[in-house]
Image 1: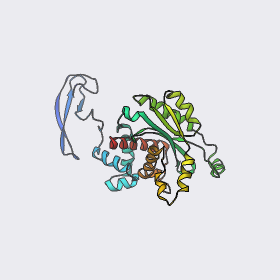
Image 2: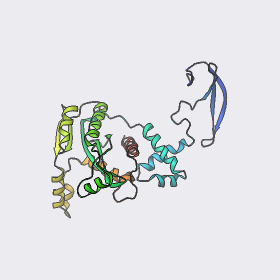
Image 3: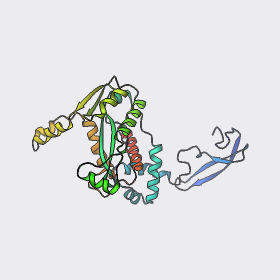
Length: 282
């Protein structure tokens, strides 16, 4: 203890202890001689005022391993509200490892599509992944429904805002601010928004555009053959992370009754998974 958290005075004395049940330990308390307010050695801890800090790590692992909030609460014998609050806290306090120079050399950018409670309200999840499988950035935004669902969506929910450009711009701004060096190559599909953004934020990088449809056609032509597995996927790193997101975050799983009700909670869940993914790989 170097100062009082209330008045920042350095004049304080030892007062007494208090007992913590979950860890069965005594915590020292102090009394400030200037403002006469007390504080403890846990006042400066990130888990200050948490009654169950021992649940932070188990909840983060379960939520990043394909479990819903309700299932996580059942497995840990706690309330669903506890898990929901822990998710919000963990997304802000479980920091991901900063990218290294090796992570920044070759990066891939693509978008995953999911839904907000119903297929009539789709979402886009632009993400950046390094060739070392580190998730460097992720955003979530609204997009209008496509195909035969577009008219049904407009009738039921009205015109839906298209945030694809806004969220892609925020993603590029984030990775441009966090990468230690300029990337050598940036691999994307042939979406028309990517060349302008890459030219603006990474003018020195080589932009490699991949025809994702052509790759899928090659795999379909070689179905049920051994050659199918040998077809090279230039976007393998990010496609593999997308597949893991579908598996490890229950609200992103296809044909599931677990869906996202709030976009902000999906963003926080993705930030939690990003930290978990990068720490595991690190």
